[in-house]
Length: 395
Image (tube, rainbow, N blue to C red; front, side, top):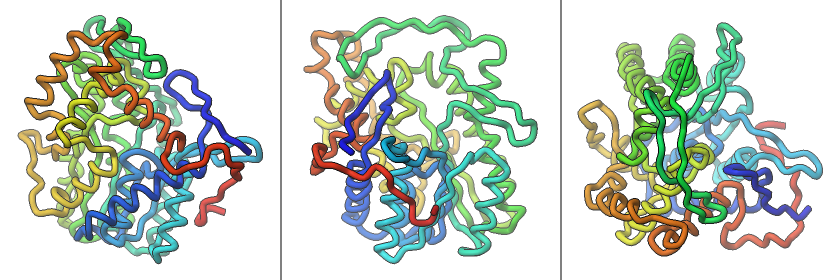
């Protein structure tokens, strides 16, 4: 079939298997071009099919020749209906990992569930024995608690008062004012339950109790802080409360892993176009301004550049360079004073009329479509493609 992008708000309803595969190939080639990483050899990535999780799996496999197990929750294709981009990404990753002689298996299911945790543990026991790196990169808006069966939903709201500021519709380039009502009732608690550190700890507890973590194991979860302009709705809002919990959980997990010399870290990453970030008001406008500035300074990074640098320079490169709260700051280039000063200056004047000049809305839009396998250089979108793709380890 011929697959074209169909969008609704911040979601693309279709995805392109060839475009997704080319995206994966491009990331693989980037990692290989940067040279070998003296990293982990047996890696579990929880949330492995898109964004930072996919970049982590690629960096592990093609930077360190690691065996990888990926966990994700994606929709396979059926005849006449494309699958989700994460499904196509994983199929492409396994195909190219296998061609390179690398172990790669995947489990498609709800990572919050006890059943999937058990499946992963059994797979590790059967095939790898133990893992020496666990990446936790889940980004889900809902969670069914495995102990109670209760379903929790996260919300994106400020805490304590309304939030009003600018945002942009990245499809049209129209800059408008937006106002968001504050959290109420159980909004904060529910968001922390979905996006905080509880599930990360449950994973590490289950893996540790099953004796599938190697001596000196490392585990890393991903977080974000961001600039002053997004602070009321992000870091000081409901999601920020969840990130605070996630970051605090790293210390608890490190204590739990002391007996085997294990360590848990949170890496604070750069603002990037992901399916999750596209849904957050204000963020698309901020990213379009940020991209313009960082590209002009030659310090722009996408997911794969971020994670390759995290691995090669920080996690396995000798110096973690932790901040005063014990976090790895791979957002260091984004948060440079000169970068943020320019963002603040441009933010004041940003409008529908001038955004195409002062921002990089085209770069934002292209990155959004790339997530779904569209607008990827070198792909013929007029060619007929087979939408039904299988993942080698999931038949």
